[in-house]
Image (cartoon, rainbow, N blue to C red; front, side, top):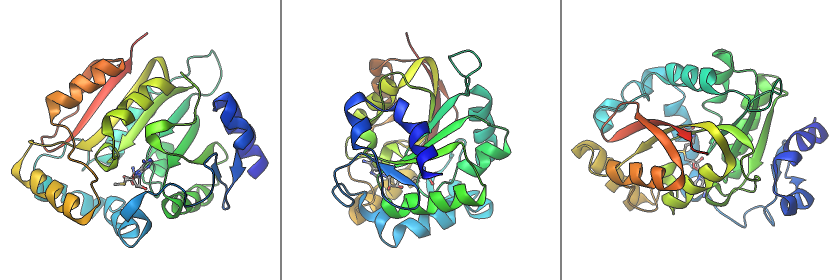
Length: 261
Ligand SMILES: C[S@@+](CC[C@H](N)C(=O)[O-])C[C@H]1O[C@@H](n2cnc3c(N)ncnc32)[C@H](O)[C@@H]1O
């Protein structure tokens, strides 16, 4: 299985990264110098499992509007996964499509994508070792041979240019120290015509969301203030994303977009 994972991932990597690919245990692959060299911050401690518990519970997640105000696609994550599953198509004939889920955390989206009929390859990527180990358990429970786990910094992905057919990011952008670099990194690896689906907190959306952001900043969960909606849309456009479509929400928002040529 581990060898098969490497065979699946290697062709997607930048040339220099292929040689560095190794298994860090539990099927988590990495090209980073050594475990712990780069850190995903608070998610490696107690907050990670707590976050997973809340986000993966349909009952708790439906309370998101209490914390953020209108929360876009978040309360109906199955509907969001359906949208991603239906829109992710291969750019190469009969080859299976490739979807990047980043940061994947503890694998929240994976079972939903499979339940909604997505049968292609999934690259589950995150910087957090503990988060990825939980995503590995989710994958193993699904006996999912078409999913690989990649530990990487999402702001500087080791994937080659234009290698994936779509990227999905749930609550990731606002956890990045450099959210603009994250948007650019996604635009580099998604092929022209490929898709992006994004859910993130934004600044200046609602008072409640701004308070949540402040709480996240104080506790170190949110490393820098996320952009407001116009700034995020401008970053997306500047990075090469087109047909930018809001998916609802005010403080916690969703966007879909297509990669320009
Ligand atoms: C709020 S969680 C979202 C995870 C997942 N999408 C979900 O909703 O279950 C944010 C994730 O970002 C990861 N993360 C933080 N900084 C990162 C970076 N520079 N590169 C990749 N992942 C990072 C954390 O490890 C954490 O799993």
